[in-house]
Picture 1 (cartoon, helix red, strand yellow):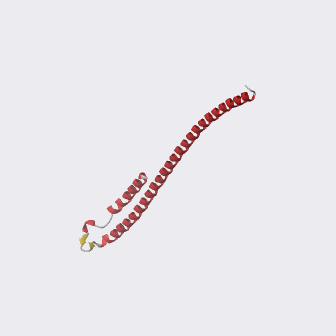
Picture 2 (cartoon, rainbow, N blue to C red):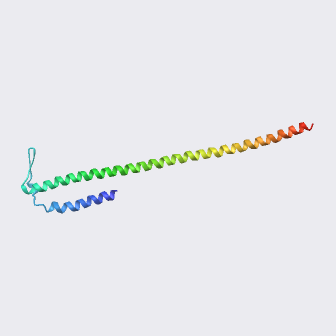
Picture 3 (tube, rainbow, N blue to C red):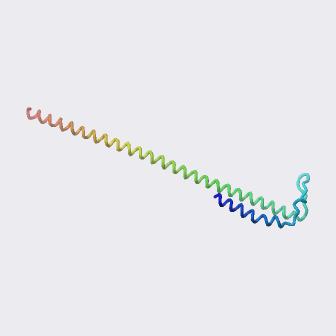
Length: 131
């Protein structure tokens, strides 16, 4: 983006320098009076062109600033999406770790329950045989 702006400014300077150098107006002949400026007839057209160019430059600057704001907004939204993705990934990883831990506990509980059921069935079987 910086390269585009620099390119636009350099093109602008290259086109306006020869125009300003070839003007028939003697810029030092402009006199400031109360409420405005007094300048010769030759400068009238050049002043009009300069004011028009100034308005065009302001419009260009507004458009460039708006495009820079949109670029910054796009980067901000991309960063927010990356942060949300990272946060969701951490939450999912924590959930998987919790499920693995609970599955290990469940295996131990089932093993212990099976062990005690085996002992209990042997005891009940022994009691029923009279021993």
